[in-house]
Image (cartoon, rainbow, N blue to C red; front, side):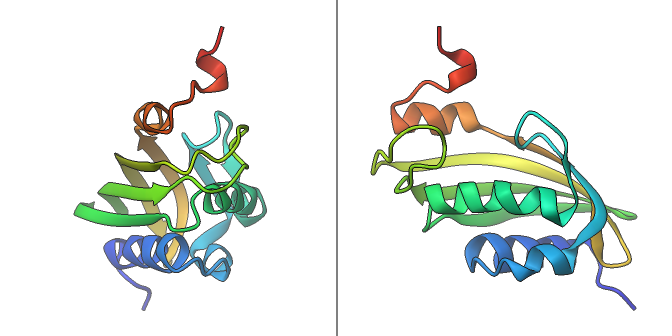
Length: 141
């Protein structure tokens, strides 16, 4: 029997984002999985998700994501998250600022047979950019 949707998403955030165990992507993200709301484009499968993870993890090597609350309905789980980290990498399109960032977000995930098959992500990246003292490229003039 596969894990509950809440157990899968908690493992995803803890093992991947907090412990940086990149093999979690292959284990918990379906081969044909889809992630929305991370890059401006749809991210497809583990091979599409790995570059996003690597870019963000390099920018924030101490990134930590806490799940504040989770709501489960059938194969769907919604998590409200609190994100913290110090910007130490140059992979977001600008030099490392050395500044701390704290922001919140939410993920809605559909879990089938213990794997994330689709996710919708809503994170306050504008607040993150403001705390880092940069203007994101899409908002620059």
